[in-house]
Image (cartoon, rainbow, N blue to C red; front, side):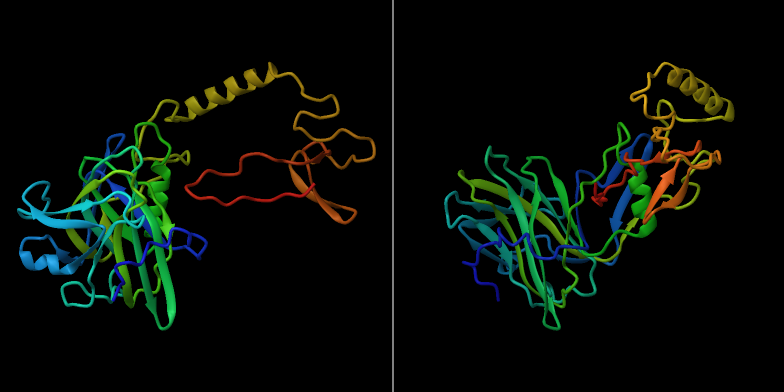
Length: 332
């Protein structure tokens, strides 16, 4: 079992971390510019809602105290009050004693864990979750999965799998649109979870005493949502689910935008007399066939882009926008 004095691995962020999404959801549904998206877990195993004294046997504590209280309960009448002391071994925490039918150590058939939480908001208090697991000799760690200190009730949801591909695409379409609030996501690695050794909730080096209220701890199956999977893109390639200022609604509107852009381009002065209208290099030693199209052509041992009027062209600009980090390196 977990050694209560074992501290969270604050310096182990260098381990390979992939494939777990942490979702912090303030409500059971998300309002996105008129579109309501509901999320609900399927095939859940409720570990505890702290409705009886026996439930305290599932909890170990280091640097603090726990008790059942009749405030801030989200399932039943009771919640768990967790008092964590400042300046006690750096990481005061509670951990779940796993290995029983109610709190199994084998999480392989589940795809996530969730619990409801309220937390005191100190100036220098941050809270996090740590999970250590293994399967067939391979280890996985989910370390330093932070959640904000807030006196508002929130649901902490840890997804062990990537969201469904279509769900990811739809949620990606909604990101960045004014007025749309979506869950924040953090990825980590918990692929090997046949035997979970540590499930811990802790405060990170608090310089003041702090209090958490926790309830409705569940292991969950696939996350179901009512995110639409059909008719999500309109004829112009835009998000069909939402409306916003500047969205194209007709061919005539698109043509008008094209005319306005052409008029604006006429007012833009050239940036370099050695560049053509496309930004291509005007040089007598590098002149190629003008095909009217951008294309590739091998010049010596190097492949170059050639612009529509036959000049060497290098395009260095924004490629795409998505909720991930995938840089493309260039030499030169």
